[in-house]
Length: 322
Image 1 (tube, rainbow, N blue to C red):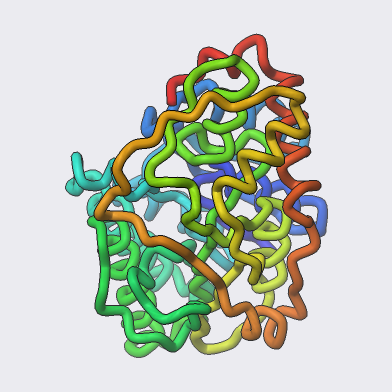
Image 2 (image 1 turned 180 degrees about the horizontal axis):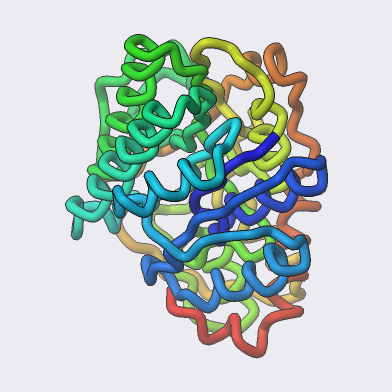
């Protein structure tokens, strides 16, 4: 298949692009290398994942409607995987406009370009944040009415656009809700990268709350496998959780990093933010049923891959902006 992957230099997008190529698909990537977090991380993925994989990509923004139309018309893909997004809960409080522009208007641009070009296979990256304070484990059919951040609201709006295009134009849509993705070259605004950096460098680990909050940590390789497994399916419309089905306390993650690095965290506790939830937990029965998917990377093994990556790239990763 010919597949457009937006956000191809991103943490998840680079892995998905690489795995699609390994599986024999032709990928055309799109990424604007923005400074939502330190662009050196994206440059590393371009140089070490996209370029060695021979993945063709365009430097551009999904909010640029003309560029999106031209890309879809020129490449004539069989499917579009929209992984481009502004991510992060707390940052969305400060600048909700850019979140809506990218996550909602950008998704609309892609859907419209696909409609006009006759491309009806569309996959969207969403987030566990849309569940808010829902009953656990979070199930895809849950009522979404307790959103806690502009980020979650923007992703819910993008989901609704996809459902609308399924209804109006018979799009085949898969919406993925990702749960706390981590791994090598992970986003520096997320906990695993920050914890590793702070512990290895002997800096104070800034911890919101007492560390007893739980997250359903999911390794990036498992997430990439799930996305790729859905590319050639035509389900009408499905919403699918990709998580580990195994919530873990942040204190345990910190302990594992301490064990792997032989260093002790110097923890400074801060108030628990109103935008956060105490726990996330994915019901992944639908992913098992529809995609024959199961998380394969156990947490300690996954944390070790992130630690190993950091140590191998420590000379510059220690200076990454958090």
